[in-house]
Amino acid sequence: MMRTYIVSFYQIAKNLLPHFLQRKAVLGWVTQGGLFWVTATGESWTTGSAARHLAWLRALMAPMESLNAIFAAYVDDVRYRLSVTGQIVYLEHYLNDLYDPLERRIYISDGSPLLLFLYNKADGQDTFVIYNKSESASPVYLPNKEDAENNVDFIINIPYDTTTTPILLDKIRASTNVYKPAGRRYRIDDNPTGPIWSE
Image (cartoon, rainbow, N blue to C red; front, top):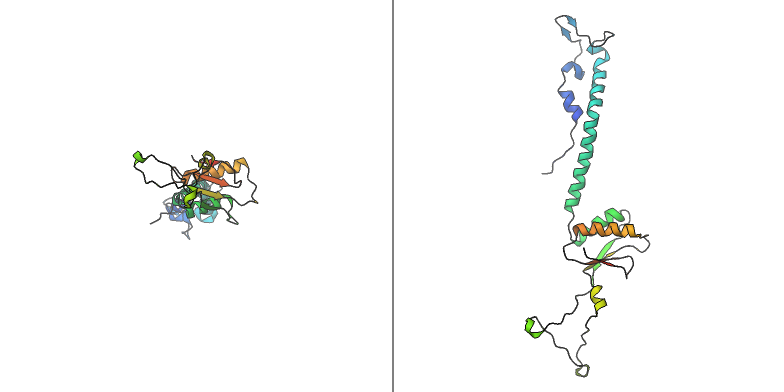
């Protein structure tokens, strides 16, 4: 069950007032000494004074209700951020909410295929056989150092008509780093030869 944090402090305070201050009385409030006068001009509770007291009460409660509205907005924001995970669909939704809320064109695609690693026979890893060209087997290509540095797990694709600045790229990187799974490397593809972020 989801709780609501909106509280009407004014209504609570008004309900704690005597009935004659809540405009529930139709007659003046009579004490043993006669009518109860509240102002220097001699107005009783039933001649407009209750409205002034309710307005005063509303003014007293306004800061509390303002703080309550700020807190409720904060709770909604935290609930939203807690619902985001490192899954592609959630991460795409989150990035589009932040940086392309109208057209929602930011998407995530798979990165480069896994690189091929060579092991010694003593390492006990699964091995494959390298053939000579004359044996007409399918060729196996070994990556060079530059290919290994550009290998990423996923690519964040930004629309090419978006004006990307270093500040915007840093914001996208910071937003992504909060939710991406640990150890995953990615590239922001507004520039195919751009840097790889792996923090």
